[in-house]
Length: 360
Image (cartoon, rainbow, N blue to C red; front, side, top):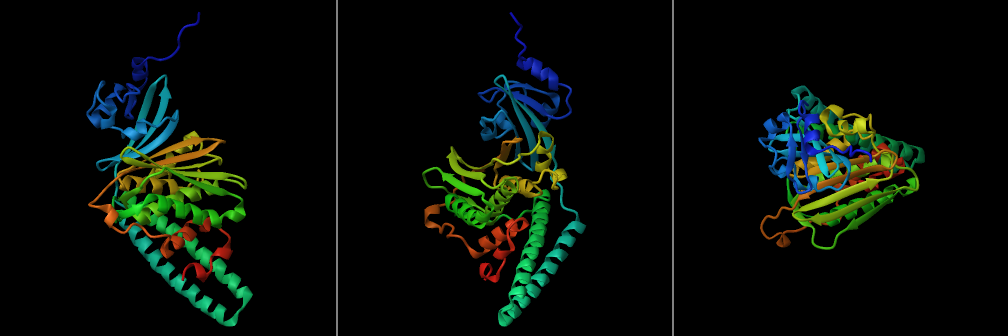
């Protein structure tokens, strides 16, 4: 008979004993089976303690075999890789300090924002002339200019949000919001705009009231970013699936696509400020989604299946302030929400959608 080659928890612990990165192993009940010195020093825990004091319970409960997760504890953000091995979840951490944005960067963003406002005013003036002259060629030119303006605006907004996330200064204005309404409207709006691309978006939501206190603008930006990322990795005939559910005291927003996915060696980089580039085709989108989730006290799980797509799961804690049923929940889609969608989708959307009727 062959020998059992499976590793025992103590064997796994020995593998990470000298690793400089914090690492620990957790059983299915959440108990720490092994913890290396780096993790013990970081979290102040030891074998036998509950791993929930170091890792959010909803992350450890995720059934995936291999995934990346991002969460925040206190003023520190963590990127963590999780691998299931024989009933043991092996967690490796990459802690990142919160650093303020460089003053020069902040100043440059302010200058760019002011310049974009002048560009928008110039395009608006050109549109007025177009309407007066009824010139089709000029109309097509203004559509191109509007789209290019929104592409520049998208880059500027992304950089500003990234700076706010890194500097722990991202504006946060929570109010009562119906998550189901927000997600359904966003999916419907984006779905209609990309019909010509042959890509469909489906939305599934659990029954029940899905009201919570959250920042509507940030959540809309987060979902728009996730959908944009999925669309750029999909082809005609593909379907992007969005789901919203309630799990205990948390809401789970899932966005799954059958696209190309992200290779394992690039998976961690797209969640870190050091990897804020377009190497993996994600740009700033996934980093921004992570920051927005953490700003709400939530976490993010990224499961890439190269050749079979990408699954992103955002966990947002349920928060209640007073009698939320007496507050005014978010209304149906707002004009600024539409502008946000057109800005985010400007990287691939046809110029025909960039007319004043969508902005007035």
